[in-house]
Length: 119
Image 1 (cartoon, helix red, strand yellow):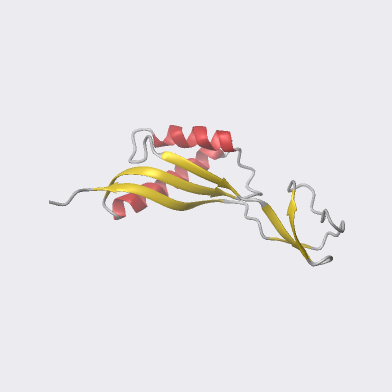
Image 2: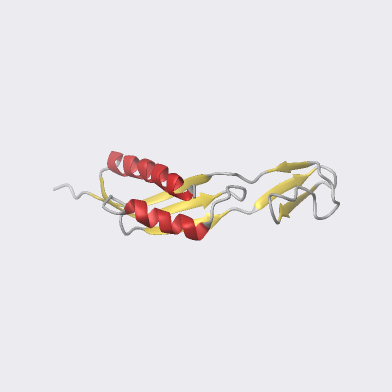
């Protein structure tokens, strides 16, 4: 299960950014999961909640956007969406000359934080 490692690394980045901006708490995190990342969403949610315990991000809302497997088929000159990363043929023309646009990673797209009140 590589989701725990992904979550630990994401949390390091989240806490670094939150502290740099004077945040006392992270209230929301938006992640984009690449179509070819092999990340299981339910495992990611579970691991994220687990690694956030006793941190600035404990109890924050997690928003996950699952990217589609977008490709460009050079053979039929069409944008297509692959159903699985294991099948690398165009569903329109059966061509295999594809440029894959989809990502294979996980990106932090947005953070929502509460800042320290300055008096």
